[in-house]
Structure formats: C-alpha cells, structure tokens
Amino acid sequence: MYAQLPEQTQQRIEAEAFRTLLKHLDDNKDVQNIDLMILADFCRNCLSKWLVNAAADQGIELDYEAAREHVYGMPYSEWKTLYQAEATPEQLEALKARQAAKQDEHTP
Image (tube, rainbow, N blue to C red):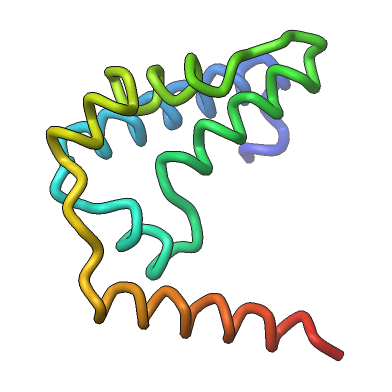
C-alpha cells in the first residue's frame, strides 16, 4: 500500500516521521548519543550528516553546523554543555564492541 502512494505523499509522510523523530529525541535529551550509537548505530550527529547529504543530493549546500542546530534544536555547543554526559568506561567498551562486531560482519 505505501509503495503505491504518490511519491509526493510518501515524501510528506516521511518528512512528518522525521520531524516526529527529532521531537522524540528532543523530548528525551537524557538519551545520550553514545547510547544511540551502541544500540542503533546512529546518533543525532549522524542525522545531521544525513541532512547535509540529502541537501547535497538536491544541489543545495547545507552547513553541517546549521544541520546540527536543526537536529539538536539549539547550537550543538550549547546542547553539549547542557545535556551531554561524559561517556562511562562501560559505554565506551560497548561502543568499541559494537564497532568491532560491525567490522567483523563486513570482513570476508
């Protein structure tokens, strides 16, 4: 059914889902980027990079810091000061294990 919707309708739905994701992340500032990386292999910074890349695909130059401000709802430096906690040794180890496992998946 979804694939049968007009492309413009799909894009509007996807845009609304993205806005909902951003609001969800904003409402859950306690969820740290490292936690997102460990569990889902993406974080707020990844979303910002994806915005920059999507803009580039449309021939639009989007500054990375502007994209981050959109995703974070404020300048990244401010968000980092207000909400980013120091990564624990356990988080760093879990991220390292996630990255190693991902690398092993791609090694022949």
